[in-house]
Image 1 (cartoon, rainbow, N blue to C red):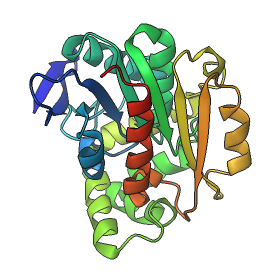
Image 2 (cartoon, rainbow, N blue to C red; image 1 turned 60 degrees about the vertical axis):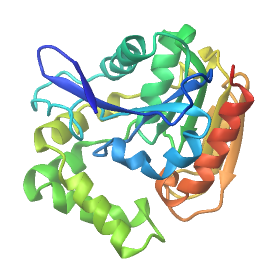
Image 3 (cartoon, one colour; image 1 turned 180 degrees about the vertical axis):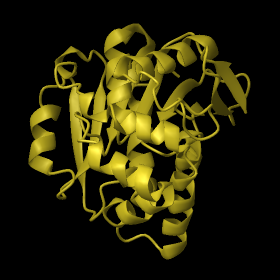
Image 4 (tube, rainbow, N blue to C red; image 1 turned 45 degrees about the vertical axis):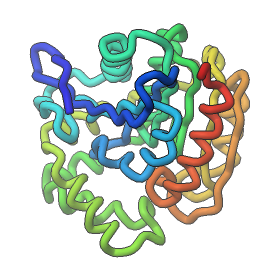
Length: 263
């Protein structure tokens, strides 16, 4: 486990899962998690992605083991995208495959548009292209704490998962520093990558579901604006597919990456 500095606020934590034979010419995959999560969210994916690729996963600025951000930190999509770009340049310094889940998706889109030379493929899993209105959630966090936020929002997120999985996710999300979560939510409604989508130059896989939180028809509209993109719709009652349908999503992503791999 390693860190890269993000002056003046501390560090971003990342880890490399490398099970590749040293003499093999393997590609590298970067995994970007969602809100109030960490790189541990990708654990079930590693057996699938790691067979043919090196995997780099990191805790986004302020989350997981990365340094918490002050509540008045000037959040922006470009700041988060630049974190990803800087990590790729520091660790790999060559084109990579990128997978983004939930609100991590817009981060990957912006990074791919800003530096198309660094991105071989992009996979978007349960991704919105615009941030929600974060004011009510921010108030809930401030008034009742992170655990209350996690507990009250877990139902539609992990619908159908066993209680032990739900408990694990509540503990993970409630461990997020309130200053990071509240500060982020105060700016989340400004996230919007709709105009970025037609500028994506890499092959793109969109994995989605048809549910109230992620209506399929809405996803089809913006996915159609992405050149060289594919859409896969899974049957699920949750909107966090990278968790509830982890095996299926990981297999789809690994196959898509292999199809566009240089190995």
